[in-house]
Length: 193
Length: 234
Ligand SMILES: [Fe+3]
Image (cartoon, each protein chain N blue to C red):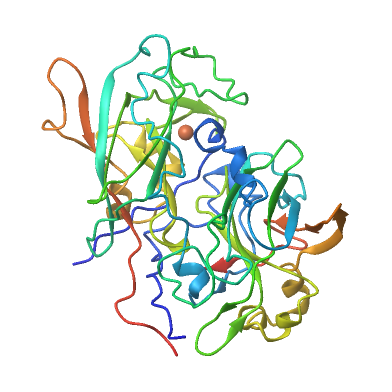
């Protein structure tokens, strides 16, 4: 017997009081998590390249060792009690969001492949009847060349939309800029997950 | 590393399209390029857990957040989070938000000329129990106008956000009320092509859930995508 899954509906413009938890934009447990701290900043744009001020993002990632805080990740790598790997942040009036997190380690892919370090990202907003899903990769990572997901995108310009842009540092914390374009010129690659 | 067991995918007809011209806000926000199919990896089958109380104490009674009770018809909404194979989803986070009984949200951008209720935020959350059950006490939300087209009104609805066990199981949806005459005119409700799937979003009045002299009861089960029965690919 199969039950029909409950369909997705837009989060609409008024989710803030229900879902906004600014503390979830810091994944480092107030700095206690193990690994290299990084900051991710970006903006969300629509098809007119206008900022989207009523979106929110969620991210999901492995810890510094490349292990997910989840029972189905049975790798013999350390778990970090201070790192859960999940974050949420709303966009502001200029469409900006930010996360403070830890650089993730590499995780296994399908078969005997290895995935380059990445962060799964999804966006919810008014006008999105279902959320969009993308991934953030790190531009300098040598594993990107052999990453099976990046490799599945033939168009190099499109592949580029999944790479954060190294943009200096705030003290010891490296900054990666990751803009998301929902539609049109420079449209981010979104995945059917 | 053996291969992971992925999740079932949404089926055309049961899920909304991105672009739906009847819902104007999709026109500039819907991706124009085809999505890239991603075979599920460890990234997609894992996801955040909430069993340890990380989301904070449950907030299940929306009628007791102010100095006195909010205005409106008191209601109980309860149900079970299941997957499409009928298995309960325990210990997952369910968040809800809604307009007050006059159809107004506590939100700076909601300019609907209807009163705010100082005793109602319209926000709650709960972690499901071991059987996947959840329950909230709230107020029946009012219908509200929106500017999609001239004189357009949203059906009465409650927004629900559910995680499920993995990144791929996540859904945000809306719960509707049986018999609401606005549904046949609501492009967001109608964005789901198949009627059977649309009906999944309509709660059921449940006399066994109503409490005499106190509150109406509505049952709303939420069905998440399930696991594939066998591993795919090597
Ligand atoms: Fe709404």
